[in-house]
Length: 300
Image (cartoon, rainbow, N blue to C red; front, side):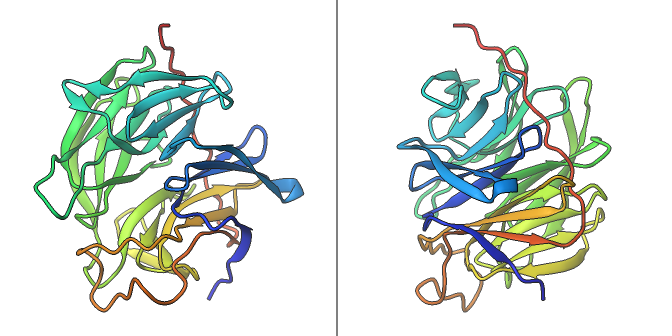
């Protein structure tokens, strides 16, 4: 069993969205519920709160030096300090209530909207693409709880997680146009396991999926078969990214505020044990790959 080290312990209510900046060797992550945004200067092992009272569900690095932020009110261009500019609050009449996101090789952004509510009938989420001119487009729909995204190393496949459906989908992806097609179920997570949450893809094309309620990260081969599990101390393990000089450092977020849902696995106890809130690290000498940067321009 691999041992996960604790890198930071801010008691994050919903630690999420870890993102490695390879140019500056900085790890970013967010506390969605606590409305906080952090960074860690990895070589010095120093971390700090960057911004609070800001809702960030996910960020992508932008070539401007700032970020593209997704949250419950839309998709935003953020300079990393004080200025946030709305890119899209809705698309084709649908509200941009966004969760996870990822930059593509051409500088576009893909992100998923989510309206999941187990207590009533709810609108299904969309997969949205924002082109470099800032225009959003719906490229797929019918998603219950949009979550982690990733690209295969050859950039011919886009992966997209639906946590409530316990699925990771695969799409054929066109680098040239940004179009996605041929959605199919690559991974169907059993009901006895946790929910697939944030994810990433390593340089060998293996998919790493954090399991909320599962106290682990699962590594799947490109065909969707389980290759290994990495146990974590946190029941609500939320997301994962690669970083470090050679991209073999693995960073894992977790969430400390228990969020019981009817789709929990059988016999899961949301009231006892360590729920989460810490940022973890492990190195298995498996290299990840660099994240792309968006290149989105927004008219003032």
